[in-house]
Amino acid sequence: MSNKLIISTLTFALSTSLFANQEQQKISDRLNDQRIQTEASVVVPETKPVIKPQIEEHKQGNSISITKEELAKHPDLVVRALLPAVMQGNMDNVELLFPIYQQIPAEFKDDILTQWAEAILAKKKQNYADSVRLYRQVLAAQSDILPARLQLAATLFENSELEAAEDQFQKLRSEPLPDEIQTIISQYLNAINQRDRWVFSGGLTYLNDPNINNAPKKQKIEWGAKNSNGTSSESLSGSKPEEAEGVGYNLNIEKKWHWRDIIFNELRVDINGKYYWNNKKYNETSMRGSLGIGHKTGKYSLTILPFLEQMLYAGGSKESETLKRFSKSKGISSEFSYWFSPKWQLNSYYEYAEQRYTKRKHLNGNYHFISGGIAYFMNAKTLLSMNLNYNRTSTQDKSDSFFRRGINLSWTQEWGKGLSSRLSFGTAQKRYKGITIFFGKQKNREISSQFSLWHRAVHFWGITPRLTYSFTQVKSNHILTTYNKHRVFVDFSKQF
Image (tube, rainbow, N blue to C red; front, side, top):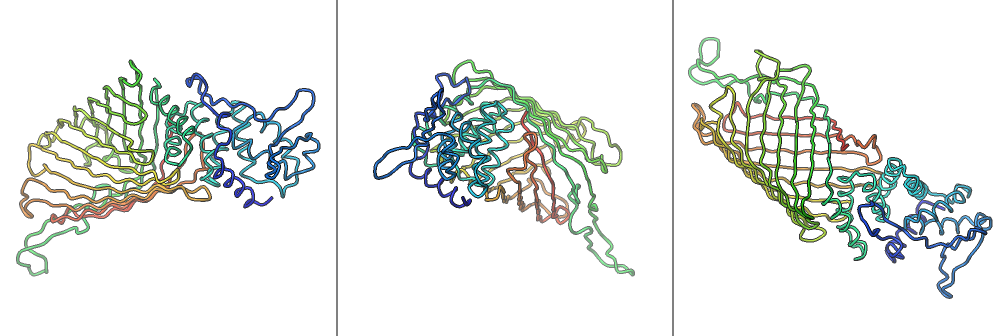
């Protein structure tokens, strides 16, 4: 059977009766058991292996019953019997049919159907890592098979990969699924939201920055009368670009304690930094600890987190290459999200902090940062988002005080052949309050763009590498702060 025939059969079955016999897939009495229980739709007597593949005869509405030996002689019937079994996630039927399917001629087999069945069997054996890997391969080959995505989400849930499970369930919620399936998804999301758990996540990013010090495009400004050798009597020079190669790293720890069904306390510890092995004077590390309270349901969430933060920095000069205390901050942040519908989500974030610097006292002050945006889940494969943000920073020296207004747009897409991408674009205006000697009040125009590409089937130990290109441009009336920056890097992230 050709690949087109298999997929067209799947598509037809999905469009006419998505998740047929819904009662066979339902949440168990206790969601905390982390199981979707399925009842066998095919009766296999113990004394004689007889299977009812439920092949519809549209005129008579009858089904046929044949032995396994007879069924093996009809490859087309094997495929037609295996298809509803994998779509319903019926482990017993898949386990019965798959050995027969393996014996049929190659022209009747299909890679997607094979991997899907193997994923279900791996899950039955509680080989969750193998099951997740196989489900990802199925969706990498064809991302619009919604029953497979639902089964993947449930398997991730059972394997305690709750963040990944939540992501898949939210994608599914944007699809026009039957009410019974939407109810199941909501129950899973509520179970995830109410789970008290330690969550550890982290990542590494290879960094190769050709302009780590953000050196200006124009290195020298001259004015005044020119002398005999053709140079001006007055000049101002900028720094030359410096290269830096290294790694960026982050470690995030989260813990929730629910003391009512939808109210919880939350602890967060975030460590972020950059290590450049060939330019260590730009090494930096920041550590933030937060402890707060939150309120979350399947439709909205609100979290308030007071925090303390310490930043270590080598200094950016040749005097030292070792990390030392650079600044400390204390403040409060709040996060809010609300689902208008399964496709539309509102997000907002606010943070206020007071900053104190060890040596650069003129930078002491405070800042307010606020952002708000909306996300549109067009379907399980496409996510569009827009975000507006505002930052006001006040320091002792007005020439370092500023306000910044920006907008960011992003598009995340799952393509065919397993490829996924994310494209983002941002622009902002930055205005300084103080007056500089040569240029008056500094005004910057910032433009940034980033493109990431990854393959969903390339997945090792829960890590999917992403190749990213980013471009940053700053145009300013202060010529020595005008620069362009291009970067290409690979990042790896993992929740464990």
